[in-house]
Image (cartoon, rainbow, N blue to C red):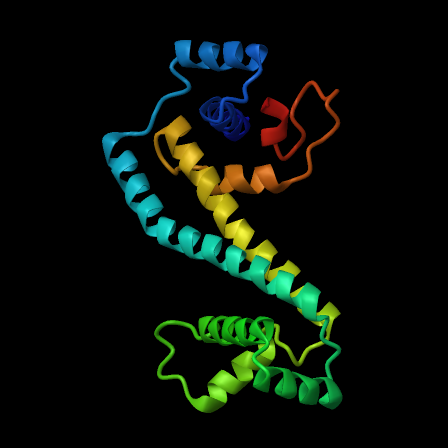
Length: 211
């Protein structure tokens, strides 16, 4: 029961930080504060949280840049509509000779995304490694639908990095630390129950219920 209460208070505080609390939920949070149940983290916890968020910011910024690159790749894929196969590859070679700017940009993006597949600290990257990595990402030699699926999956993965960082930032502003943030985020990802629910389910409340 104590854990459910903590989760409820944390979600109320997040809703407050995001400016999404309903009046009745604001009164509920104020009541918890009056009882000393909703307190900010210690100075040490706040410093640790800020340090963690600062380290995560670079990853979130990289994810944002990746989403922008994927959006550009998607636009070119929509214009070129590659079919895959040898004939399409031969046509692309000719178009490349003729200075097709979309094709040149698509190749540059493919190379960039392939390089990003190389994990830091995993040693030097060989030509064979790069060839394998280029086979993983979208490219001019893959059919349109395959490229589309690649973009959708990569966009989802990168957006999840951005969303989690934003959530944790709001959590710290509301809660004073990152203690309990992982559980609160997992709770947020669950589907919201019917709005008629008057009490938490077995797993607790969701963020949507405190908006």
